[in-house]
Image 1 (cartoon, rainbow, N blue to C red):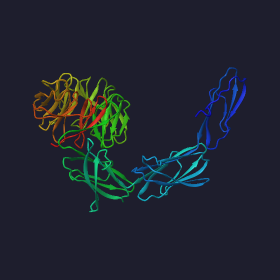
Image 2 (image 1 turned 45 degrees about the vertical axis):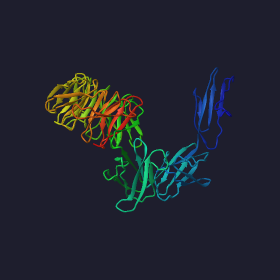
Image 3 (image 1 turned 90 degrees about the vertical axis):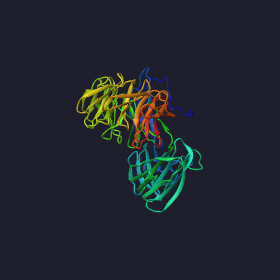
Image 4 (image 1 turned 90 degrees about the horizontal axis):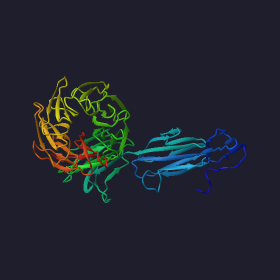
Length: 569
């Protein structure tokens, strides 16, 4: 607004002593007063005294802050319920209302300015079916949670924000059908253990005729069950809820039972998939990802370009990242034997341990000139870390970070894996070999005949070790008893076999990094059945979660992490 300037300059004035004083403005406080040449400042008197010399230029800045009281409401669920408040101050009381939704007709916060210093109270009216969960202010203040009242002693220029957090005892059910489509799914919501039930229908598309979710509010504390009825052509793939407390999932029955406390809101997602095909669900991760691991109901991935670990909520798509200071270019992410996430810093010769609950990070050295890349939990409960530069394995105690070193038996080791014989096996990327490391000592290596640039190993249902040849598009099986290798080409169906993995049904899967496919391996010598990795560019780093889903990273732009729902056996 150019009506009045935010500064004024006086030129051509004689040397001497000058004072500049600011008049008091109701509802504002002079927060700071400085001059760039020192000068004498009296903040209480709102005055600066300047001794101006010949040719001197002085700038004085008056910083004012408006007295403000802000009140907000955060409701769960945010369903647009209107909350009535009463605000009282030295001049009396007045009502106002807030709600928490996307409708701008009523805001979720109010900002009151121009207030005189003094004591103010804000009270939330009683709302049946809603509980005041928390009440806090940025400047402390006196809170009576039971009464829903806060008393604010407002000083001149003080800016206070008070947040009322309210919750309804509620259950939200969300239908997820990737890719989104109009298939209708019928549910029964019941008071657990009774015949008091109500049916409802959901689908997963943009047509508002049938909603994609439903929320039941005003529930009494207790146990409730939600059951999805069978739908022809679809399999209930998974049921997930945003709380680990008092939730009983029976996927075979299509049912989840939730026990609610007062004011608790639980959201449950029912995910259905076509049982005849692979369904790839990509999530935008925002940065170049690498391996994927699961912990605590989340998918985690390393972000080597920015030295961070990202956590993905597969229900909402929300991404939270954690810095990894001391672990440069993090890779090789796994869930360790202690329940923590473990990974290695290729460029810093370190290993990182991240608590998935708190985000707390501990960093351990892997020794100079290691170039750690991948790791696994060994049969001894330690971490077996493959060092690409040292051609060695660092065996690290996850509790202390201390380690011992032994030869990997191959050149440029990758993919340490516990074999069906209880030994640790590792492939050599540069010499195309595989080595068996006996935990008590001893190493034997064998050539991976017909294979180029192997990345990892997986234990197949046949008791053999399966391995992929990245450069010449091959898949092979290693007999752990003899080291004999049988390999065959999977081109052109899979181009750039990056990883192989075994699912919970014993099926062996592989990715084609270059032609962006995921393939189900047949018997030795058979061509794989392949599906496109739709929405994922450069699939890399296969892993499997506790629900049996495959995960991989899309390392080429746009950077994604993908969940892969598998067909029935």
